[in-house]
Image 1 (cartoon, rainbow, N blue to C red):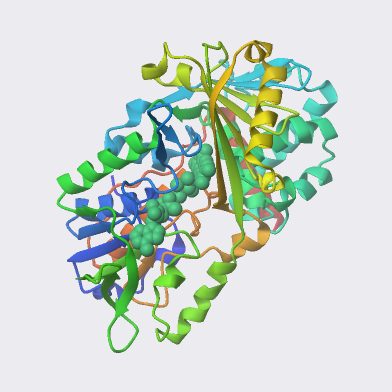
Image 2 (tube, rainbow, N blue to C red):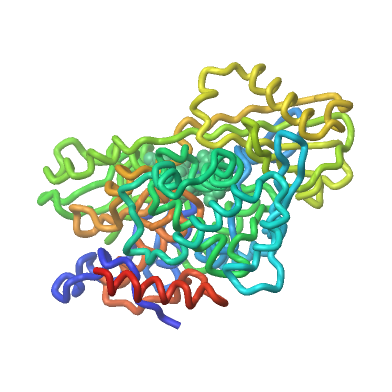
Length: 500
Ligand SMILES: Cc1cc2nc3c(=O)[nH]c(=O)nc-3n(C[C@H](O)[C@H](O)[C@H](O)COP(=O)(O)OP(=O)(O)OC[C@H]3O[C@@H](n4cnc5c(N)ncnc54)[C@H](O)[C@@H]3O)c2cc1C
């Protein structure tokens, strides 16, 4: 099935579409993260020969692992999770043949500061009421919290995407819907800060509404939380290299690009110059880098319109911190559980997640999103806080002895999904006719996530194909609304159009 390119910015004028990039041929894709992998895969599939260049030793970009010498194992730089509603990422997993390595949880477990455990899960009721029973039983919230949350969720569901107040932040919007303090601290904040990596006052409603509409309201399974059962580098690196090569593309790791090369008009790229002095020519150049990195690859005398891109360097980036703890004995806790009322938001039990570690002593990972308040904290303090919060949440941890720990800080983990940044996100087009942008920070409609990265790679590849007059291959769309949600969403469209 061929679907139309969704982003109107991708639609080319007939004259442009004749031969913007010099027809089929070759493309250099700079950056082997999820965006670059996706772009290279799609280009290779339709016969535009890509060469994917990645400066690190393996592919995966920010979704990667390192080798812990003390424990002699691959460890994720930080735990990554996905949701069932992330259909493009799921499609990529299938293309790489690794979808079997994602374990989806149909119960989302929460543990509050009073030690009370609750869960969100679906019953037989149609969406949006599929999780209503679990919500009614959610012990960490009172009836008045739940009534306020229910009202706000209905407002989100009924609001068509074109009416979402993208210039409003989630905290202001939640206050305008009279949420209780507990509803914010135990429901809205934990879900949105984990999903968007930013505090509520800096999350545009464009992203907050999207997470709830697509994740929790419109379909029965969209909320399910997916976690890899292998290290991230195992998930992405070798499978992606093999898949791209099998389609005739090339992949070069440990290959850093120094600059993009332009012709004498400075309007068209001719290829790239590598750090080792080698140059590679191509009809197309795809930048699948983090937002501020492409500027470093442009020659200082390049096209004056580059100033349009200078704002990219100003997009605020938000940190994430991950802590890995190894103990001397096994510890029985759930595979993945969200902590309420604490600094650490999630605990992952790797022994329960990785079949290979099932019988090993405990290996637990914790995550803090939007972690700038811990920027100055020492490694020792971070580990001590993790042990304290873990011990309070699961007394069984206090009996175990810590044998090794690792703190991973990502100062520039994701872009801030703020109202200002929402207006700054661009791509895939650039001032240069054959330089195309990918990367999770581009205009994907999603916060800075693996799903956004995969969508951006597809957007870039489809732009090139469309410009080259080639047929567009299949691209997954969002999950179709189900049950009563479908009617509520139709009603919302009708109602808001009538009021305009
Ligand atoms: C700590 C952390 C936790 C996260 N948790 C989640 C999560 O739970 N769920 C989720 O969906 N998302 C999460 N994310 C976000 C997700 O990892 C990113 O959105 C996604 O991986 C970005 O992919 P990308 O391909 O756009 O960019 P990147 O992964 O940054 O890829 C860019 C690539 O370009 C390479 N590169 C840079 N310069 C050059 C050069 N000159 N030449 C060649 N190569 C170059 C880099 O090495 C890198 O591999 C997390 C991110 C971090 C950092």
